[in-house]
Amino acid sequence: MVMGVLFATALALAASGATELLTGWIHPWERSRVLRPGPHGLGLLLSGSGLCCFFGVLAFTPTGTAFLSLMAAAAGLFLTGTALIAVSRIP
Image (cartoon, rainbow, N blue to C red; front, side, top):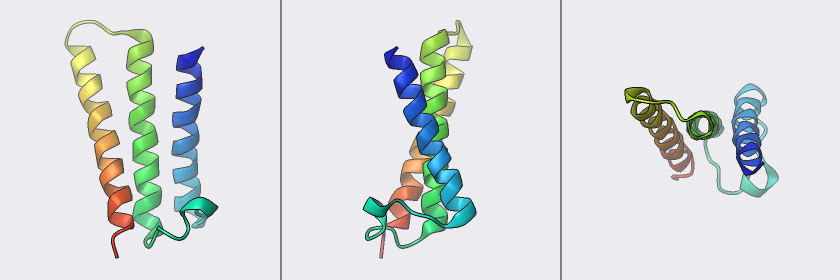
């Protein structure tokens, strides 16, 4: 049950990033801090995708090197998204 809630939260994060990329709409609580909506939307999309990959790996527990490869991909997506979100807030 907890994994489902976390997965839904990650999907909502990715969906808000896609919405921001397509329409330029930013959440009201982030409007004062975001200076560049493009990198911010892409960062949300990548962070949400990384979290979905991470929670998916933990839910199904693959064996062998697939586990390490998927965890590395999830970490790469999440860290790239976080870096883009940080860049979008730098004046």
